[in-house]
Image (cartoon, rainbow, N blue to C red; front, top):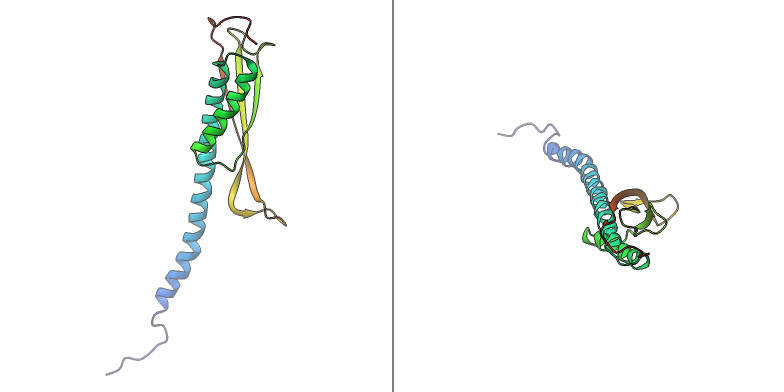
Length: 147
C-alpha cells in the first residue's frame, strides 16, 4: 500500500537549514566583533597602565617615553592585536615630568578593525577607535632633578 505523496516530504530539513544559517551566521559575526572589541579594550587598558608604570619608574624622560611605547606594544601583542598600532600621549603635571610627587598621565588610542567589513570603495577595513588612560604619581622619595 502506497501513501499519497503530498509534495512536502523532506522540506522541513531544508527550511531548518535556511533559517539556521540566516540566524546563526549573523550571531557568529556579532560574537566575533564583540570579542574583538573587548580584547582591544582590555589591551588598551593594560597598555595604559603598563606604559605609565614604565614611564614613572624610568630614570629620565626620554628613556621613559621609549619604555612606555615598548610597554604599550607588548600589551597589544599579548592580546593578539599586532595589527593595531597604539598612539601614546604622555602628559605631566609639572614642566619636568619626573618631578617627585607629580602626576603623569598616559592616554592610549588605537584603531581596531572590524572583521570582514571593508570601507566603501576600498580594501581597508572599517575601524573603531578605542581609548584608555591611566594616571600615576611619581614617587616622592626619588632623586630630585631628574628630567
